Length: 401
Ligand SMILES: Cc1cc2nc3c(=O)[nH]c(=O)nc-3n(C[C@H](O)[C@H](O)[C@H](O)COP(=O)(O)O)c2cc1C
Image 1 (tube, helix red, strand yellow):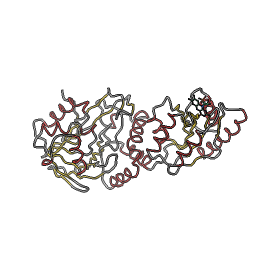
Image 2: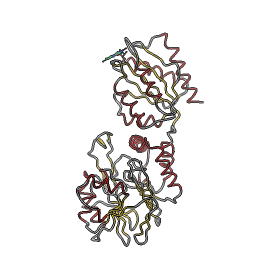
Image 3: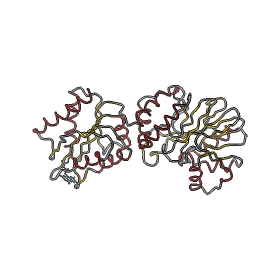
Image 4: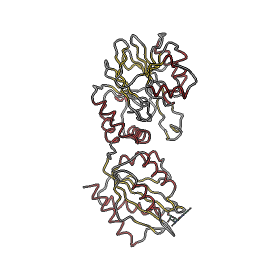
């Protein structure tokens, strides 16, 4: 049975959710599932905006067939050729032989790479600023290269002032009937998933996101229809404000995130002592994570949120404890910037993790590393309490100042 909702009289939600997939991109844990959004516009011409992941294929096709209600499909708009949205294009194009695929030249090339279906004589290649009139609606195509693939475009419906935003403004989290932002409480749980989605998937492309935000600012947008998560029609500012911060690598909260690695608990003990000192000095909402226990996608998201980061790790086979190393490599790859970092390392015979962690941070943009790193020789010694307290004082004065 179809499972659709009306967004407007002539615009229908035909997407669906997957609550079984444990990892998005086989990488990011998604305990709350994920939605694959897609939209049918019923104008003089009919339009399908992107498709969905193969995992919801049966539901998806039923939804599209129902929404079209016996009408042929005229246009299949492809904003993004990533398989979680393009997996059903060949099925749709085969089912509706008169449909034209509307996409960028790059997307057309990618389609040919992914699928053994020749649609070259049914492809309408569009570029920045092109328009498509479907009757009452005029769709504007706006390129969004590298947000987060090279072929991405977003589509603006002039009549209803809707931005179909591709992966921008998307979030993890399955939808349960309530497809609009004003039908759910977009609380910390949703925001954490939105941040984790953005920072891990789009985070590297802040400059490109800024370019799209500038283009979007020139449009009168009353609704945003992304490819994942709720449709924004009430509190558009909520996510726009976050996007501004995330894409400029500006911290959301002035507080300290402590990311530590430990085998036997001695490094952990030192950061517990540090956290108490910070709290005594008035630092609130300290966030502390064992990098072996917390998924790296959460560590990345928290690193984008917090202004100050303490890295604490033992030396491991002459290197940095591997989970800490992986986390550092991720925040570097995702271009995290503008953070203040303090370093604590540990080692029983030749502690070098501190130097190595610093070397990674030094290659990142606008990162300030606090001088006087602390080196533990197996465990925090009494005569190191004063140094730890001085570090806490420096962090607290910056955070509270
Ligand atoms: C597999 C392994 C490799 C280690 N390699 C080094 C090393 O290269 N240099 C060093 O000084 N200590 C090394 N250590 C010792 C730890 O860094 C040290 O005992 C540290 O205090 C552990 O901190 P923790 O109690 O927080 O786990 C190693 C420990 C293990 C288990």
